[in-house]
Image (cartoon, rainbow, N blue to C red; front, top):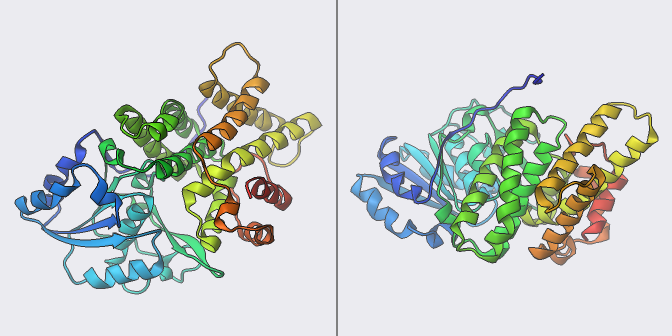
Length: 402
């Protein structure tokens, strides 16, 4: 029997090599004034981007342009919306990585209301956003966050009193996710690695989430199969368009899955680390993934061996999560006929190996020290993890990759 579930909105989706060429004619269907949001470099390095302005003009479009050099801050969003609120923008288009797509998503929402974006953020804000927006198209140039398929824009204030909070509404799902794997061909290896591990983490955490359902499991497994074929290939050979296409698909699946099943311990820690210390999100996810899953498995096995689990983690539930870990191991292992424990251990070993293979940095390489860990743990909110982790468990995960 299939358990009941509810699916969040998804955008219209186009995934095709060369799809960027369709953008000018698509944009023209929304109106004349287009606000283009890009990163400082990713857009201009993307194949085909240099001819876009000419094609926009040929379609009678007026283009305004905003660059987002890093993760979007309240100040950056407020400045952009103040600059273009009276410009009659008909469509916002983001071409870039997750931060650029989040920025465009937030700008499209804030063009329709007054005040600072901070006023409408979860937890720190004072108001609920009414859900109004200027139409928005998301075009990823990396394969990582899946923001092209989600309803939230992550806004970051870095520093001692920093935060990473979402501007969220069902209506903020992009009107169109235009996914052209060719745009990722020039993505540098270190960004390919970090974005790919973020994508991998999102798929695995959604699959193992306490909120997972049969729909998200199906999508997550297809995405993880693509990861198994192409994460390392896209890193070692950036010109491998088949690998890039696989990773574009995996990132899209990860966005749909996280929007419907939630995430776990790694993302619970990553948001806090990014807010307090400004370490790139994909790096944090990639560096913590093996340690967090190793601890999850250890705790699930401990509870299973105890014989009388209590609370929300029943014996059948623990067994189901361990079986899921075994399924993940089978995807990556070139071996058959082994028992579940062997595949579980293989998966954890693979996570350690791929972290090394992709040269994912340790947290300490960004200046993080043992003295910083308690504050990170205190401020982290871990939800939907397959097993409840105490503060000392979270500290252990961080220490493992310091």
